[in-house]
Length: 165
Image (cartoon, rainbow, N blue to C red; front, side, top):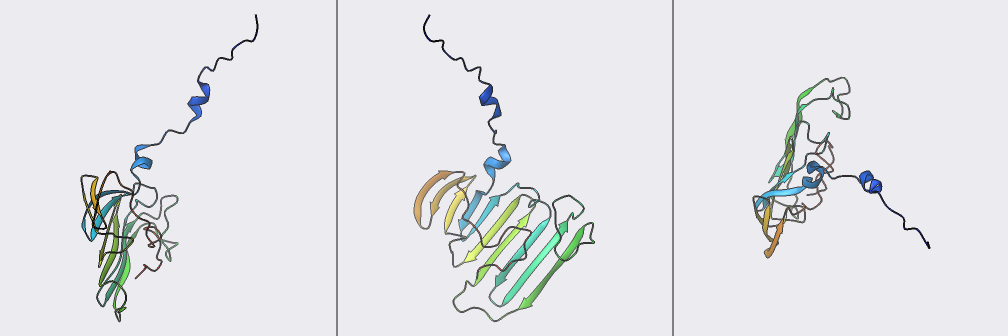
């Protein structure tokens, strides 16, 4: 007979990477109202512990708490000998930036990150989102289920970088 047909037993399909629910839900907006939003981020090691960085008028704060530094991949900057970083941070009075926001904060507790800014900005656009269903973004109707959050200059929950003001 002529040519023989090649039969693909489907083994090649078994090597495809299957996306886990955590990868699928990473950086998705869970809820948002006006100048605040809550984002789901189950990424390890970012989901370990609690962190906060923010400014309100002339007060600036930064805090990390309950960081299990004994786990592989989890870092406690400036505390290399720590097994668990219970609490570290600062609060200080600063001269407000006349061009900056009046209020801006990013906090993270385990898998959830909360952001707020007044006035709204690129990292925290004016939005209305309920039960992971986005309805409004930047004062425009924008229906989208599981909308991805905008990037943040925060640099990840574990970093102690400066937040964009």
